[in-house]
Image (cartoon, rainbow, N blue to C red; front, side):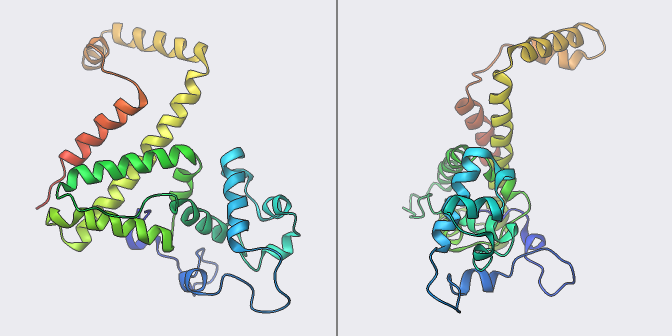
Length: 247
């Protein structure tokens, strides 16, 4: 789902001091420690606890110690599953991506299918408001992420785009949704501050009347459009998808 910046986001291993997670070790290795007695926790349960914490309190609340406390474990016991927050974030992103339907039903209208995928992504990110921030600098695609990516690539097959272009389109779509949801969440927070909204309206009215911004004044006085979150998202999305160049 979240291949957003191409190869520049691939984990960097073997570099002194470089951040990143080894994808082979994370996704192809065992999900439980190899040594010692049978563990009292599973990687799935630990990841689910981290997701619940992020959903309730935000990404900044997620630390190894805090997650350990949520599952009733000592912090040291969790390091076998997630040695650092970067690894935990990888697990969290892939965990919640498993909520998205990965099945593809061929329909032939690839633009319509991309729009449907974008609406799924938006609803998904609104359920997990921390997700856009978590995606900003990552992530290595895990099994759930790969399954959803496979769906998107299958939807793009009728477009005639080559492989690299398909990945670029999906990255562009995901980045658009993540950015829009971030703005949408901030807007919802602003609505809870009517005094701030009133001050912004007065400021823009003054700018429109100062004579120095005629283009902006014309825009601000033009008839409005539906401003519901769903209508705004759909309008922006249609412009993006309908304007894609397939050559």
